[in-house]
Image (cartoon, rainbow, N blue to C red; front, side):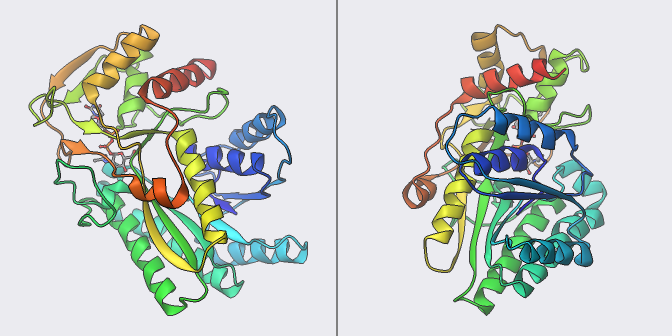
Length: 343
Ligand code: UD1
């Protein structure tokens, strides 16, 4: 089951699971996604040249609703296709919104996770891959961040992600011989499926870098505000670890396979490329690869930003045999292709 499977990362991962022969049940409330993505996943699967394809199912509902989640597990058990594992994407993720509406973030993200875990436990479904975030780290470092780095989120969104990791830890400790849990700490997901069908839903009030760049390129915003050029980095702008969404999707499949083939355990794994790119490098890559000029101005630093947030991804390399296959040029090319294809 993929909760939030019609979202940006959930849809890429669901497609890849299907292409790998897994049956996928997407459960999504559609509060932040659209049913058209389901059709796009189907179309993408039909167009894929792979061996055995999995079967795709969809049930609309909110994972905070106990009766709904319970009925979905019961339905698939009755149909002799019980839910064996969950990849849990469902959640809300805007940092500024979480600062304004913190209770909603605790409700949707944390209550949703608790409810899901209660029903999983009742159904002896003990395998879960959870969408966590690098935002839970104390990003005070000029070095790459390891999983053992101090955890210290500074906004409600990050607090809910860390809370869920703690809930998963307590659950694991209560039944150590049962649970297989992986929390994937994403760095900065970006890019789109090169097939052009799946992509991030860009709203005009999105504050992340890539959606904002597209709003500037579409003339919906006059220029990109680059938050600070006086950071202690090579060119003075912040450095981030942008990870292509298809590489990120692949990390989920490898994590799930790893869990299913190994003893019960609870692990947290960084998913990033291990290579940083500054905001100016992103702007320059759009120019070099696509000849697109992004109008920008330097403005003062944004509250809550850090100069350098890059993954030490050696655990994902060694444990999952996961290695990123795409770079910043691919991210720019693929996201632009799907953007213009879907205008
Ligand atoms: C943000 C979230 C983080 C989340 C991550 C995943 C914040 C504070 N953090 O991280 O919790 O896990 O997204 O998507 O929102 N930038 C500009 N101008 C802009 C937008 C961004 O200069 O208009 C710069 C930022 O200063 C930053 C970089 O681009 O240095 C990336 O920003 P963004 O895409 O918002 O991601 P993060 O802040 O790293």
